[in-house]
Image 1 (cartoon, rainbow, N blue to C red):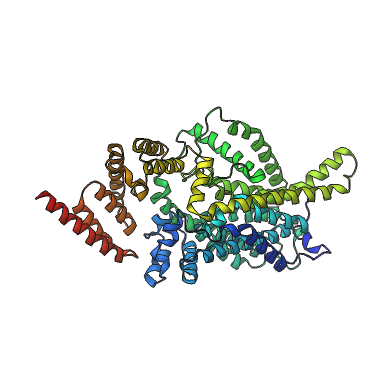
Image 2: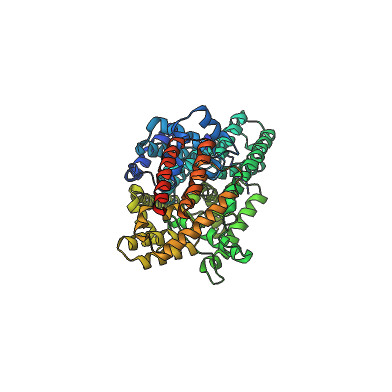
Length: 557
């Protein structure tokens, strides 16, 4: 079967959809959908990524060097080597400071730009104009993307997507720019590495009769090799960061068979989320799959069919295969192979969706043609109209869902409500229930919730020291839990060769819990000597610890 030229779309007689007009339309639509979230406060990881991150508040030479240092202190703060991500946050902070509307607007702008670039890439792949536009709008309004767009610290996701799409679009005619954009995309968020696999498959799918006028007959493979070299260098630094952060966490399913079942089940869950939006939730907290889990059992025929389709496309060197590879490679790092905070997360779908959408748009005409051959006659003329109507209704449904999901990010209260509604037995929901029980004087019940959260992997000492649990002070179960976590964190930080100010501040908390005020003062002095943006605060903390020590000494006399 002959595949349409990837530049055939550019030769269509109608030119109604100019890229600037498409971008403006997408931005206006995104603003309408995300308006409820534009005033949402800094939430969860926003606190240490942005609001409390002194390195980005003042872009001094020392702070810039720390941000660019692949072995520096910020690695353990952001759990990746992602200097572009932090520099973008730094520039945003210079413009908006703590005005969240500016930070949200930047994320929104990048999401709309990513959707517009995706439209251009679909057109470059030979997808007809209207279909490419519908695909770009589908990506823009998909409710799974709300988490990536409405959560301020996910600037890394939207910026990496823009840079990655820019790299794929630039490569054929401006390969040096393409390689630069690819490198920047990696330094924004590691999943952008998928672009390397996509550009290779596109190159293998191309034939000399498919080149646009003025485009070289080859795929500029030397520049593609440059992409590979950039990726290898980045992978070294990222692996060092991984070993210090996520690599120290336990995998969700340590047994090989359970991990494989869970991986297949998660793949199907993402497929359902992508097509129906069913299963979307904040901070998902799923268990590994058992032998009788219907998700992994149902995944077997579905994934086998998709794998067969992808293999056929790759074998026949059709561009559709590049998009299947896109989706598969985007899924790989979030499949459960490596330890991540959540087995499934809405934001993880952000990088998979373009691949799934592009593959579907390229597969549709081929499948319709196959149906016509089987029927022995052309399909009715109204078939195209029906498909456009179905796609429009689908997009309308997703737009309504995105608008509703945007409300979740308006406040911490609504975020907590979403957690409780979808995963009442998850670790984060259990923490919320513990907080509520503590506030109502039900101490035993609150401690039981906390123990259940620990059994599901929760281990953050600083969270348990928040005012939410102040009513539990003196409860033997709560005190024992704090002591166990404090000992664990003391041992963990002692194993770090060069702890940062943030590491040492956690150690100070642990030492205070253990009653070691002398050790806590020594750790604060180490943190001051280590240098960093928290030095002024640490001098205050040291004074407070000295007062606490004096009070303790007086009480013991």
